Structures are given as C-alpha cells and as structure tokens.
Length: 129
Image (cartoon, rainbow, N blue to C red; front, side, top):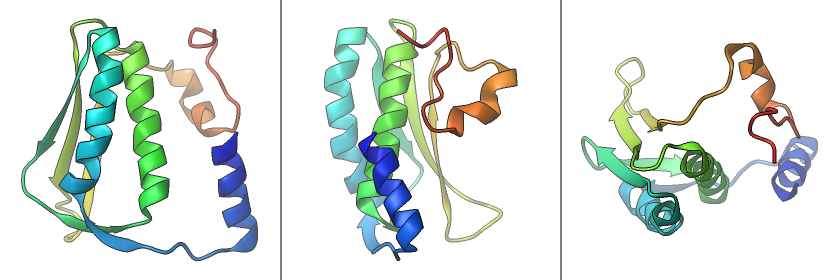
C-alpha cells in the first residue's frame, strides 16, 4: 500500500526523481544477501550473474523496492531446491543500457492474466491466501 501511495504522489506532483550513479553489483549485492536469508527457509538459492561491472543512473529507493518485490515473489513461488537467477547483461539494441532479468521456476501467471498483474491490488486467485 505504501508503494502505491508513494508512486501516486510522484505521479500527481510530476516530481523529478533524483538519480545517482551507482555500481549495479554494489547495489544488488546487499539485496541478494537479504534475499538469501529468506530463500534458505524456502530451500531456494538466488544467484547473481553479471558479464561485467556496470554503473547505472538510478533512483535507488524505487529500484530497490522493485527488485525486492520481484525477488520475494520468486522466493515464495519457486519450487524447493531451485535457483533464482538475477542476470545483468548489456543491451545490444541500446548501448549504455542494461537488462536486469530475474528468472525463477515458479508456476507463473496464466497468459490471460498477464496484463492484469500490473493493476493495483490485483492478485491471482491461485496466489492469494
């Protein structure tokens, strides 16, 4: 709920987000360490794979929230004994950009509901509870 209110406030105010240059590895490493603690209870292992060190211009708090949200969902819904891979690669189509992909072995979202998962308060019936 706090995330939605913060984003709504930023949208309404048209606020310019303050960005800063950070090492992506240095940014992701503590998030991964926190995720490993929770992942151990679910018998899954998050791993970081980077082809090279990159610095990016980001709004750290918003990216931290987004990565934590996706990682926690992956941890909760992955099969025991599986790996969650956080992959950072250069974007061939746009030099200077990177792709951050978080892959897991969870059940996924039915194709018919993919557009809905980005709506506030949406929760897939099989994931509720």
